[in-house]
Every structure is written in structure tokens, then in C-alpha cells.
Length: 423
Image (cartoon, rainbow, N blue to C red):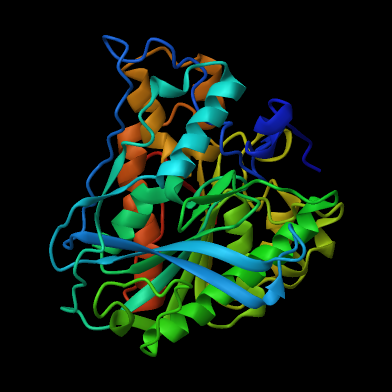
């Protein structure tokens, strides 16, 4: 079982995710942030974030929606209807003004929480001013007709924006990617009008509540996408959406992927909802929350559709690699799954290799000293630029094969030496 501890007490504890003693089952919004932010920049100026450009043929657009599930009571805050914020990333017809990396108040909460927890000034990194390589409400490209849809679920406590690099990459390749914030589990979720819902966890046991809630969240998002595809606007405020956005959704080709707890969510949703045709788990321990992994439904039953396990070194049992040969929950899931399956591992990577931290931490290292143990525990020693290129191959290739019918070759490659094919 994972043990969790809060970084600080008081109000900050309500908005910071706990750090796990082993991070493969639950990730923290703050655990992977640098501890030495003081003195950032050559003259004390805040470090400005930089993101690689997507490599696909399309510019990328993005817009957000506020969804309200009036049929569901929020399990974290009873008496309220369940509310979600999602972002839709899509192939654009042309570039537009770049969208914020994080919503402004979310960025403030994130920066202040990191500063309190890590005893560094909140102004050391310009989270609020960061912009992603995606145009805000850019015009939709209809040149390839309807597009496959991929859902992304983040790790425990992590805002949906902290996986923007791969999300933008997939959108530039012609996918519509929908990212979901899991309200009251994420460190902060910002709603229209400047309202922010901070992390509000239930009393233990946490895991069964979170897993069930995440499943319902994703299925509700799928229902909202159906409304959008039928010409309706599911946004609670009926805010204007990019023209033709619903017209390009192909809801017969839906995939799901996620990091850490989000990877678990991808598998959990596939077990109960056949609308999702293929999924990826990025280093999430499937048995999380169960003393015996065989009691976890998706572990015990497996899946009959394509699924990719992509683990890191050092996040499995006893500090070893996370694979189906080392982790009991992955192993049982592997044995019970009858669909297409692969198990890949990044031995020199760590839990945050699979999201934006693999780019952000090396960028921070150019501006200030990042503690070596922080690097070792979050992104490891894998070559940052090379593993990004590799992930930009394998993740799109999986969805290309199973949502677009473009079979690929899956084996160890000298062009991608940081990945091991376990099976």
C-alpha cells in the first residue's frame, strides 16, 4: 500500500497533493517541482517556461468547457452537483494567440503551494505567464474529416495542463485530445468567473472513492462529447466554442491514456465502457487501493481490447522497474488480458518522465541548481531530448495502429535506446 504524507499543514495542505513513498500509484502536483527556486534567472527575474513545438503537420487549437453533471452528487463535497473542467485540443486550420499553460488562478495556487511546501518564493517561476504551443480557440481544420478522439486523465493532484506537451503532439498529428481535471482531487480547478475548487479529499479509504469518481467523470465527458457531436453545446455557460468543433469528432474511434492514477483510470474506464477502444497506462500501479490486487476488477478480469503498459525504472516493487514481471497487479492484468498488449519500460526514467516535468526540470537546471536527488527521483538519468522524441513516436504509433488502422512495428530499436520491450 502507498503511504502518503502532506508537505505542510494549514491551508496549504488543502491545495497540495501528498507525496507518495512510491509514486507509481499516485502522483503529486508538487512532488516533482524543484526545491531550489531562489535566485532564478541571471538578475532574479522569474524563469519563463519554454515548450517544444509539436512535430505533426497541423497547428494546434485548444478550448475549455465547464461541464455540470446534475444527475450526480459530488462524492468529495456532498450536496453539490459534480462539476468538471475539460480542455479540447484539436488540429487547427491556422495558428492563433497562444493559450495559457495553466488558468491564471490555478497558476497562482500552484505557484504559491510550491513556494510554501518548498520554502521558496512563488515568483521564481513564471507559471502564470507560461504559454503552450496551441492557439486559443483557433479555427478548426476540417481537411481530414472526422478525427479520432483521445481522452487524457492526469495523475493524482496534478492539473490537466501538466501533460500539455504530449497532448499538443497528438493534436498536431490529427487527433482531438480531451484532458480532464478531476475536481477536488486536483490541487486546484478553476471554473468560469474566477471560482477555484481546491483539493478536498474524503476520509480514508480514499482510493475506492477516487477510482469510482474518475470512471464516472470520464464517462460523463464521453456523454458531453456526444452532445457536442450532435450539434449541442454542453458548456454550462453556453460559451461560444470554435466553429465545427463537434463536426470533426469521430466517436467510433475513442482512445484513452493517462499518467499514474490517470493510467489506472484509462484501464478502469475500458473495463466498463466499450466506447473506449484502446488505452495506455503511463506508470500507474493498477492494484492501487487494494491489499490484494486480485480484488481489483480490471486487474482480475483484464481487457479484451488493445492496451499498452509503459513503465519507468525505480517505481516498481522494491525500487525496481515497473513491468508486468515485477508488479503483481500488472502481472495479473497481463495474464487476464486477451486483447493486443505490449509492456515497455524506460529503465533510466522515473515517474515524471512521461509528463511535462521531463522537459521542465532540465530547463530549470539551466537557470538554477536543482537538487540531484530531485532529478533522480522524478526524471532519472534518461536523456531528456531523446526520450521526448521516443515518446513522440510510441504514443502516437499506438493510437495510429488501433484507432486509424496503421499497423506498426513493436520491438527494441537502436533509434530508441531508452526503451526496453519487456513483452
